[in-house]
Structure formats: structure tokens, C-alpha cells
Length: 147
Image (cartoon, rainbow, N blue to C red; front, side):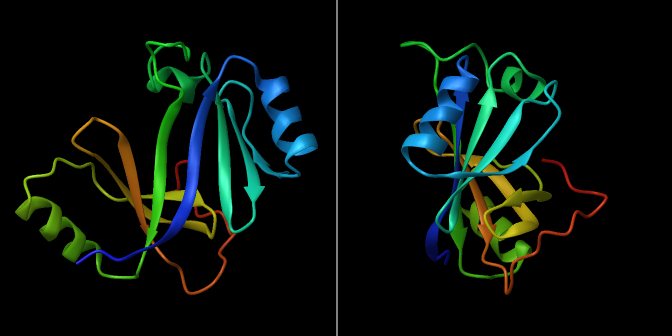
């Protein structure tokens, strides 16, 4: 069984990067932790023990999530749940047993640094990322990691 420990990160899509960054850094006190090149379009903000990822809608990453956020297009790209450490195979077996479609595990950056995670969708089509709690913070950048 999967045991959720915390929200690892949430990904917000935007057409107003500077305003979003000003709000989250100046008003809410989040610090910029990581930025990708502008064409990739990702800025990661530290929010306590979690991250808030801001993705520019017309960037490479943003285009993967569909149109720019409006009342009919989503603003939240996905959220990530940090779960109790279990084997990747046990997660795959559980998802398959419940008939839940999923992607393969891949190395991605989250609130605890780089680690493997998997994407799936809930019944309403919301994208959920699952990543196991890491033993320690791992900011090192492995060569095979994605974002």
C-alpha cells in the first residue's frame, strides 16, 4: 500500500512569470531554488519543505501541458506526493492491479533533490506524480535526470 507523507511540489503554469515570481518571493517569502534556461521555462521556488514550480505556458515544458491557463484550460500542471519509501516494482504492481495507466519511472528534481518518480492520472484527469521519500537531501545532478 502507498503511504503519502507530504506534498513534494506543485506545478503552476503561467503567462505572467514576473508577476508570479514577485508574488511568491516578495509576498509569500519563497526563495528561488533553481531555474532552467528560458526556452525550457521552469523556475522552482522553495516553500518550506516543498517546492512550487512555475512553468511558463509558451515554453518547451509549458507547451507539454496544453494551452495557456484560462477558465477552460488548467493552471495546475500536476502535483507531486511524497510517499513512504517502497520499491518501484511494488508501486508498478499496485497501479497495474488497479488498472491505472502510468508512465515509467524517471529521475526528476523535487523538494528533496533528484530522485525517481512516476506520473499517473486520477479519475478526473489530474496528473499526480509519486516519489518516494529520500533518506537525505540529494541536490547532485545525475546525468540521466530530466527536470
